Amino acid sequence: MKQTFLIIFLLTSFLGVMAQNTKSDAGDKFPGEYQPGGTSVSDGIAQKKLELIKKNISVRLNSFEKGYSELTELDEKFKKADKVILSSRGIRYEKAEKGKSGKFLVIDYDDIPLTYEPNGVPSNLLKQLVYEFDATKLKSIKMVYDKRFFLENVYNVKKTITVDPGQVEGLNLIVEHPNMYAGKKDQTDFKSFTNENKVKTLKMLENQLLVSIFKIDGLKYIASETKDRKIEYQLGGL
Image 1 (cartoon, rainbow, N blue to C red):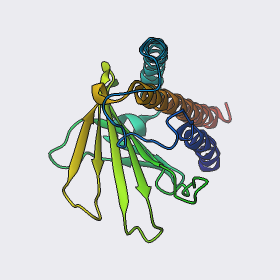
Image 2 (spheres, rainbow, N blue to C red):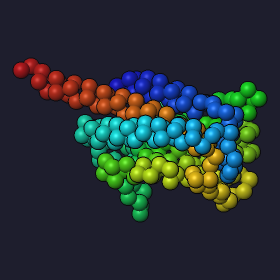
Image 3 (cartoon, one colour):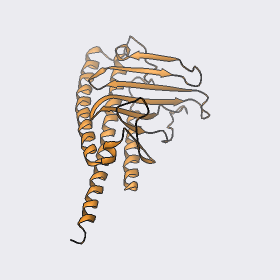
Image 4 (tube, helix red, strand yellow):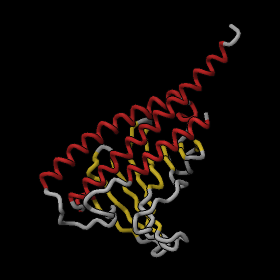
């Protein structure tokens, strides 16, 4: 079962990395480098794209919540844990930290190798997807990126996009520079993004939701197979 999980995780992780590398006319711009005002995409076209992407996000949010709910019924450990962390090393089930409540599903890409842009600079790499739940109802989504400019980690930029599933356009972006300007945070609201970058950001969210649905489906398959094998073993000899 561990081998099956590893195959599923690595395949879906590859899809996740590909989802990050979708290029737009913004070139190598990335949330956090967005500038308020001005756009190369007409308001009409951008609005149509945004409405379509928001509809797709709504459908995928529903599918993700449904899959998560089904998984908690199939997997007792998943249901009891306050935090479940998925990575290429396997699954970790953890209790909540003291003073914190809620359920969390964390998809950890921290050990996925860096990818590089044509100019040799490491590309923006998704480090974590953090889903917070109230029971099985999704409360928030965080996409945490870490762009490192030197292999020695002399300078890096941490970018966190936080999304309220009930109000996707209320998302905000926080940019931190941990090694150079400790404690400094720059926050930008979605309404300040250019139209072009609004489209790009929501498209990234849509793609990552699809990858997460694949992961949940894989976990449901493993949980179902484990349950069936247990029943077969219990029925053995009858």
